[in-house]
Length: 116
Image (cartoon, rainbow, N blue to C red; front, side, top):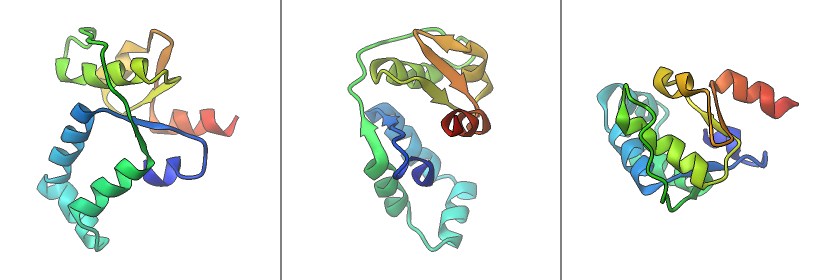
């Protein structure tokens, strides 16, 4: 995410709720091993994500991801941040397709879209 956003005119939108989830995931053993092998700390990872991210105040409350309601925060952030795309590997989010002008894309699809 960080390398993809830096210097490319791509906004990575974050909300406080999304940032809390990122911090939680960075604490998981399997993820932690990856960044520690690269000699980075959890704090450095969070700092890098916040540095390239754009913090959005999310007012939109959605209930469209029935399989995993906690995923609604990502679409709400994208809508309130006027995003064109919501990039995810989450099948629940990708199944939504498009909502209020925000299209769900995989990481590979987003790379293709930014090359155009």
